[in-house]
Image 1 (cartoon, one colour):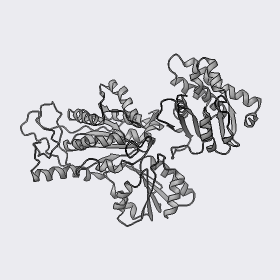
Image 2 (tube, each protein chain N blue to C red):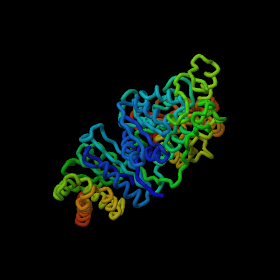
Image 3 (cartoon, rainbow over the protein chains, first blue to last red):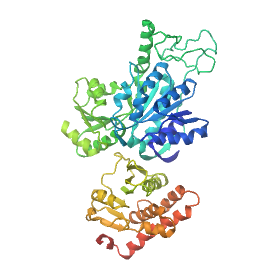
Image 4 (tube, each protein chain N blue to C red):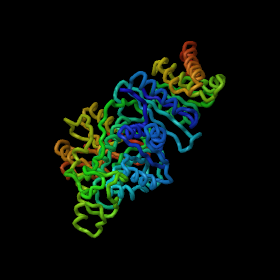
Length: 376
Length: 187
């Protein structure tokens, strides 16, 4: 295993290439630009394509085109750019087009604080484009996790045919840590049709039992239509066909929600005998881990649940926790976003508190500990 | 150990932090986190590069109370010196830092990084001179390791210049420490 000092953003680019991403279209924005820079220098070395587009909308749209043609694609931006991309993220979801969208979160609203970290796009990642659909969003709290979760994001997008969000922040994106590049990683390829090109029986949106239809590369000789309006299994427009609509729209939700456990990545610290649990993610999980250690040193039985999967929300983990601890504290860099999901899952069985800030600073161990003491 | 390298954008402090982190994290196998803070300007404006080096897992990623603070601007010294841990070390370039009263009772080491770099022919390597001085003062990494890390990062054709800069910074504080151990704290 080789060890390298890498930025979170660089690790995302390297993870993407390792997972087979060969197309990146983007538009520069702090604090995500290093991802584009790394892709621009690395992709030509692996016969990939990098293109800087005229804006964020064109960037994600170009990635949709590349992915429809059969190439693993990724784009990256930050809050202001992600807001622009949302329309076509929704389109990609309707096409069932595999794609990874990285959001290196910074303080908003609007252009906010460009160089400083936040975790304010949690609900935007879930509901930022209109309509009901299943969403996958992963959240790294270290440089090593940036590498690992980018690979998982690419794999999930290919396996389940949808845009997957990687939600990181200016702190994790810009910090450097020494990471060991694993010798072996699991790489998933999208399922292709099991009939030959031109076969009249080919139904582009006929799903397999897991809810995912095989995907034909555009240009490979299969007849299908990437239709953003509601469509039937043959990919024909069906925007007044209630039966096709119910089938398609339910499937877009179920193919994610029915596989939530498989998509749930997390780690714990001193949670087994904890009386109070901190639930956190991303950079906030680092300060929270520090708080748990401080608490333990003072005889307070605290533990940490660090969620790498934010969406689909792993409610089963919170349901389990709610039966075991006296209180839950959600630590995040916003005014209260993931705490809503935790409260829903806890369903009144245990009090759920919040500690957050959104001034460009990150949560410190002493700050989280002080809140822990308050809520107990 | 928590270290903060601070000054003005364009002085190469972020790179110096990266090299220090590589020396400790890659060449010595310790745990490291390097973070930085800078304004939207490419040059000018306050800039800092923080490095945490530890044998154990590093949880919180930000430096709150540095053990070692390097200041290459008066503004940085005014801003960060008060955060130094009790018993910490402040390293300054006296060309920029005239007043280090904010450091209170900290040990202060002055190294004329910019003058030394200019005499070597490139003012630009003041960051490497400062890195040498930082190593000589704190022994946070082995000097030989740091030299390897610097040379691995030095652009082709500048290896000799960077090696000399690093050694000059290291020697400047070693000589001084041998001559008058406590003299600097009374500046």
